[in-house]
Length: 205
Image (cartoon, rainbow, N blue to C red; front, side, top):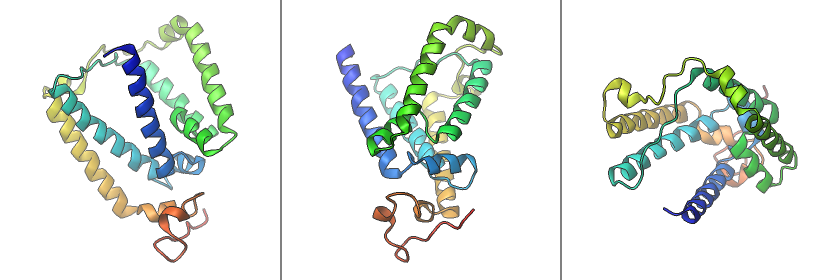
């Protein structure tokens, strides 16, 4: 695949992902913050759906020989520190790198500050990459994957995990129906209907 086609593919995938974020309202700051407070599970449901779908697509593409897997090294130091920084940033900004761009498209002006901060952080990391990676290179297990550890074919493990995530989504939906979690969010009435018609207000916290 040529570089031009890769860029086009990336733009198309980004467009589809952005539309999904906006339509699902996962890009709403309140949804993101409430997920970390364990009071709203829209974000978790969508991420489960995205991972499950991605695994099935990867099984098909790798099975057809269209794509190859290129896992990164499993370095626990950078994974843990990076994950904590990302999580703290999401709670503080009410956005993550993907949702910030969707928020800009939806008219959230403060999302520009989030994007600017992300670019600045990337520049700081880029200019100090050797020092940062050297300090965080703790528990480096190399390019190891779960299918290698468990001794299972990738396609089988991927389908098992996708099925488990699907079951988790069903359980979450039964516990916390999406209509009740959407109610009260900006623009939610377009999807759930007015109060009394398939939607109910979220009780005050």
